[in-house]
Amino acid sequence: MRVEQLGDGEPSVAVVVGVHGDEPCGVRAVERLLDDDPAVLSPVKLVVANERALDAGVRYVDADLNRSFTDDVPEDAHERRLAERLADEIRGCTVLSVHSTQSHADPFAISSGVDAPVPSVVPALSVAALVDTGDFGDGRIFAADADILEVEAGLQGSEPAAENAYTLVREFLTATEVLPGDPARREVPVFEMGESIPKPSGDEYEVFVENFQEVAAGEAYAAADGEPLVADEPFWPVLLSPYGYKNQFGYRGEPAGVLQSSDGANSTSVSSLSSAQ
Image (tube, rainbow, N blue to C red):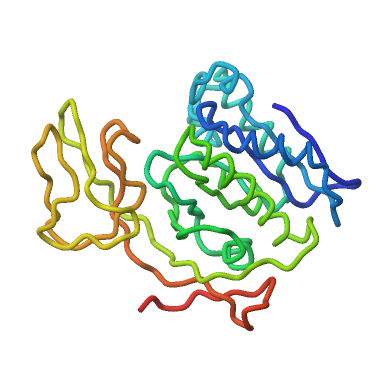
């Protein structure tokens, strides 16, 4: 694990990258930020988490680091020990964890609930949507004693993802008053993650629909070996992709509201969750 810092003092803000070794976009963003060496208003900790997996170009060494914040992972697993160190590094901080995905080219945010820092930070980020996963998935970084927001910066391994990651990191640091400036304020649709969408046995898969766009009942949303799969009821796809998961396409989502500024377009800290129309 590599830990860097901009500014003097004890940081209350952190950026975590390289949780998965096959997602280098966040690492490139942090390296670029360090090269910039911007003047900061308060200190920030920059953590490159899984250097061993990054060097090998693999997602993880022994276990998925973003499922290793739990006692269920063997004690001798590299990522179990790494999760313990990472939890210590970010304890008490407001954290942005940067990832990339196979499901959606445009950046989107992921949270576990809509508590802090979600309402104040997410509308300041260039994201297409916020996915509230609730308690989905044991052992995720959300189990650490910190206020954590994840972002998917774009398609895994792409240049746009690296550029987006850099933009998102700077936007986050502006929203948390590490960097000077007035954050932009956007309306961001919120989707609750629901049941997984199973993937039938097959050799080739296709997805026909866009994430965060409603799929109508009777609409073909994917195919396995050329055989269409049809929605039995309307749903909003979340994290849907042909090959992002081994045994599922992604998840059924439901719109849950819109994050927006509650005190005018120039608000830098106050947002509210209002009902989606």
